[in-house]
Image (cartoon, rainbow, N blue to C red; front, side, top):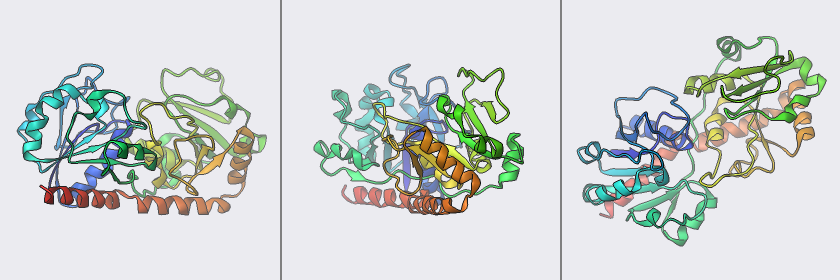
Length: 347
């Protein structure tokens, strides 16, 4: 099957985290993929996570910035299925002008990344052959698209790395446990007050953007490491998790357009226990696959338990691996291929 996909690719955006495992799985299954993505001067995300493959064509910009679209690569490529990821970020008006030509040759699929029905009329102007959503909270789409299809968000797959070797590659202490405070946008002040028992056995690793300001920048305590990074490559993303004994994803309320934490779907397969706040709505698809905390006191208590004895948390790792296998790129890609066959037969 010849599949074209339009959206983010090889960037740190949540859309790319959804698109990349699917696209690579389709290729592994023997299908031909062409990816139409954002130009490098105007893209969706903070930065690039890998080099482009030979099937990636960068021919448009974001709707909000350049609103650029070169239609020629799309109109001169061969494909049976045309998949659009996250319509809001695309140059919609210009895509609408060539959409009839795309419809003449292929079946069209829209994978929706919204967390509520948009109030902009332009969102509904396209006559899609199928609308797909990946989170049960998006069932509001059926008010407009009664036959919208649910296909879960794909994980990145199970990956395992050597903890000691990952620590060496990252220049982290070899004799300490690592508690990883994840997030390019910053760190969380309550983590300054870790119990002494944790400080004796572990170091708190903050990976932050180069622009983020921290009070401890000039004189960080010996139990804290501050690491400034540009956007992480896929390999470095994994290495931090391989090296860590716990990762904290302290992300609370969804902003408009966000539905779930794409980062956790990428991270679950690395075998590192992940701590998330109970109050957050970003992690609702997960149950026993993550460790939830209500406040700093409960987080400290659970971190101390993990530092002292990892065995009770083995079931969390097992549950996470089971979730990843159930929602692996191969499994989710197969469900999409089944949908593509269905819409092609309906022509």
